[in-house]
Length: 184
Image 1 (tube, rainbow, N blue to C red):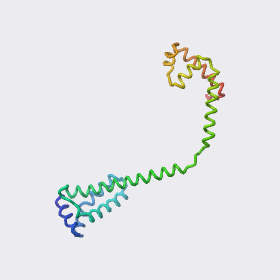
Image 2 (spheres, one colour):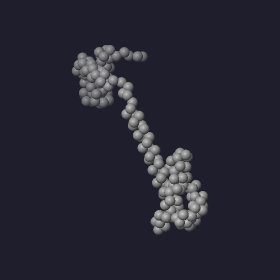
Image 3 (tube, rainbow, N blue to C red):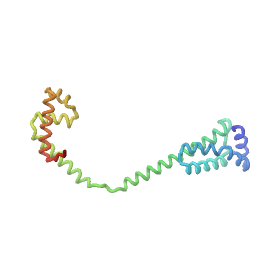
Image 4 (cartoon, rainbow, N blue to C red):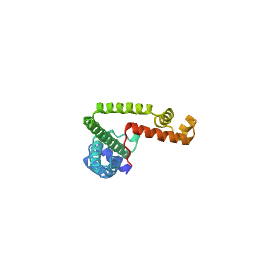
């Protein structure tokens, strides 16, 4: 195929339309297959393959046999075109997504949400102040500093059972203070 493609490509470089027809029949399936693997969409692959073959017709005179085989040259053109199309499609999809995301109205009032969050934090701080010192230490170490119950036990130098009791009693008091309804 390489010899045939080389001879045909030389003839195409001189404007020989019949040679291009034979070259087309020879390489079109491979060009389409390569482009199809890159793009995965048959319609786009057909379009890009046609663009590649037109480019081969137009640029056949630029082929340099010292740099590689005619088939490799043509498939390189096909691969580059397919990758360019894939990148262009991805960029267009990204632009559409970003424009769509930017045009959406905020589904809630951010100021009200922030004020509510601050009020809730203040209420939690007030309720933590109502705990005993030992309960507050255990809850703070576990929930705000991310320690496990055994770690809290070690940090406070008390038995694990004591930590569990302090945590249970402290969380019950917090629940009552925050008026959180418990669902069974």
